[in-house]
Amino acid sequence: MEVPVIFMAFANIADAPLPKLERESENIYRTLSEGAGKGFYLLHREPFATTDKIVHYLIEFKDRVVVFHYGGHAEGDGLELNDQKADAGGIAQLISSQKNLKLLFLNGCSTKDQVEQLLALGVPAIIATACPIEDEMATEMAEQFYNALVKKHTVREAFAMAAGLVKAKGGQAEEFRSIKLKEQSDVFPWG
Figure 1: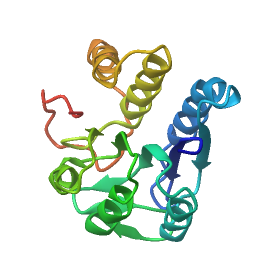
Figure 2: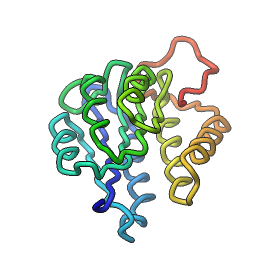
Figure 3: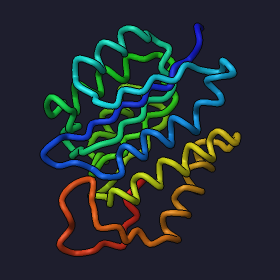
C-alpha cells in the first residue's frame, strides 16, 4: 500500500459557528504532524468540508484512508457540511469504500444513529456521539484522543483516556455542537 492517509474534514457553517472547531482542527493537525513528517502517513486536512471536496479526496486517496475524522455539526441522519447537509447513507457508502479504513471519528452531535449502517458496511472502529455535545467537550475529547493515539496507545486505550479527561472536567462549556439540551443528561455522549 502507498503511504496511508489520515483525512480530517471540518465544517463550520456560517449561521451556527462552532467557536472551538478551529482549535480542534489546528491542535489535532499539530499532534499528528510529527508522524506525517516522518513519513508514517500523509495528513490531509479539509477545513471547509463540502460534499464535493470529500468525494474528490476519497477518490484521490483510494484505499489509502486509514482514519477519517469529522468535526462539525451533525445529526443522526447526516453531517452538516459547508455546502449542504450530507445524507448519512451517502457518507457511509463513500467512507466505507476505503478498503484500509481502520477508524472513523464522527465528532458532531448525535451521530450514533449512523453507526449501525457504517458497521454493516465494514467500518471496523467508529467513535460517535449519542446526544448533543458541548463544543469545548468535543474539542477536548478529540485532542486528547489523538494525543494518546500518537503515544502508541490503542484506539480503545486512547478513547478511555480521552473519555476520562472529559468526565473529570464535567463538560461545563456553554456552546454545543448542536442545540443546547433542555435537560442535562448523565449519559456520556461518546461510544
